[in-house]
Image 1 (spheres, helix red, strand yellow):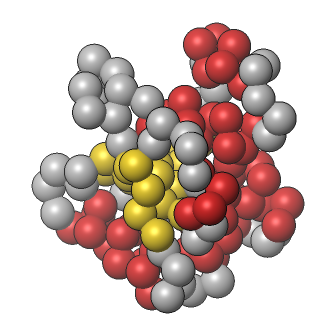
Image 2: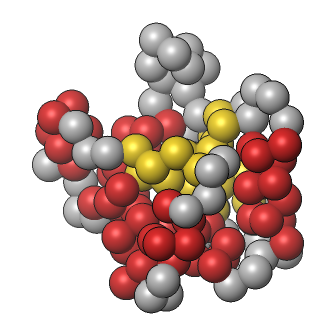
Length: 122
């Protein structure tokens, strides 16, 4: 299972969300579970809740995804870097042919987007 945290999910994890904590634990404890934090979303989450970036980056179960050239080109067509980088990270790749699921506390933001969503709202 491949899960990409959007900025709202990262903020929720920093605030002690039980559901976000379970995702992090599962990625740490269970083989086949992978958790990703796109760098642009990580910056936005840290602006919302300072300290979030350092906290998530220190977790061994979370892989921070750098912004590469393909990602940068994908961002150019969108209004928010955080959402664009998250969508790009969730897209299918050779390593993840089915793409990844986006974890969020704001599922409405993803309506009409080509991503699958896990709602972290309690």
